[in-house]
Image (cartoon, rainbow, N blue to C red; front, side):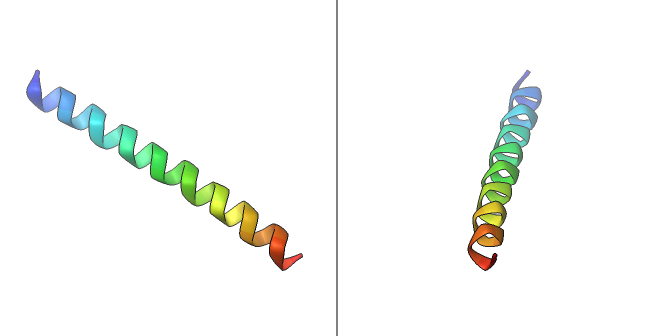
Length: 33
């Protein structure tokens, strides 16, 4: 149970980072244009 919870937490963090990265990339691309 504890291991599963840890994995879910890590996946959630990774997804959040990916979303933030995509958002930053989109903003940078818009500024470049």
